[in-house]
Length: 198
Image (cartoon, rainbow, N blue to C red; front, top):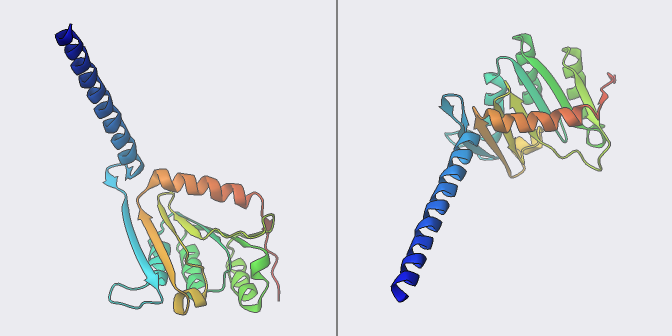
């Protein structure tokens, strides 16, 4: 009887170990699928501001994403005043990239924000503001439906030069980009078109 009970216990543990191993492998495959897009793996890159080291800073990483875009850029922001980001967006539009910008309504009534958004609108870039939330605090870019830039970095001069900020880019991450695009579209649909203010 004791041997039979021991054999049953051993078999149970063997089956349990096999089940756990199978579950772990399935979870690992699912995780790998999230971090893989096509044949190339998802590649993360991070930088910070206001550091200006050999590797660059957060704003330079953001601009790199904008400059890499070949088909589309979807930007969601809080406060928007950065001349450098404005220039990069307009340059992308001029090379044929489909650019659209969504920012918080309440945080963009100052002169620098109005000037920045006017420049985008004058360049035929669709711009909307969203005011249905206390704060639209999203700060991210989706480029070519595959690369995501996110983090604390506001698209402002202060974020580049004064504040302590971070920017994380997930290159070639279509599954993650899709989630961000779905979120962006839901917020875009709640926004209102920017009217030129002179």
